[in-house]
Length: 123
Image (cartoon, rainbow, N blue to C red; front, side, top):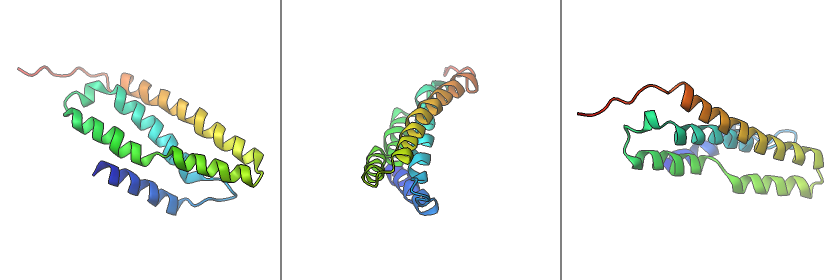
């Protein structure tokens, strides 16, 4: 179910944000959001500790795994390179990789800082 929602959300963003000026905005957006959310989910133990592990795995691997897309990134990049859109291709790679890393760091930071409340011990 999580994979269905993640993949469906990615598809809808692709419909809402079509490729404009040769730049695949929807793919960039889903990969950046997915990077930040997956990093947050994997470091928010104080929140996710109350969940069954299947929920975290379902959200991470199923939902966010289906939402993000390396294969579409690769296909978009291949198309840009075939059209010799070198600058756009370089910008696409840079935004995706550097932006993904920055949003991953932001996800880790927010999980550790904003969600750092104590987990109540069960009696």
